[in-house]
Length: 90
Image (cartoon, rainbow, N blue to C red; front, side, top):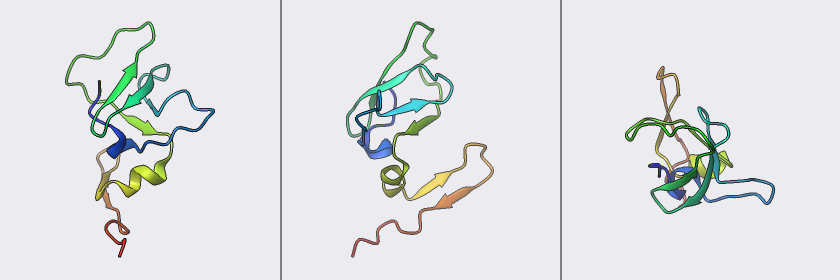
């Protein structure tokens, strides 16, 4: 389980995709199920990271993921980007 469900990754799963996203440090792992706040990861034959580890998850479709957050932090920690269109569904 990881702390990134459909509200963080979006629920898009293209017919050709083998999951709901990928983990950058574990390219063979697949995000195979989503709840709103958590995801289930299928780990191939390799050791899982320790509980509490930070993982970099990449969603299948970035448009939905961006729509679901107010601010994004760059992976290298150098900056944050506000999502300017957030909350503009008037």
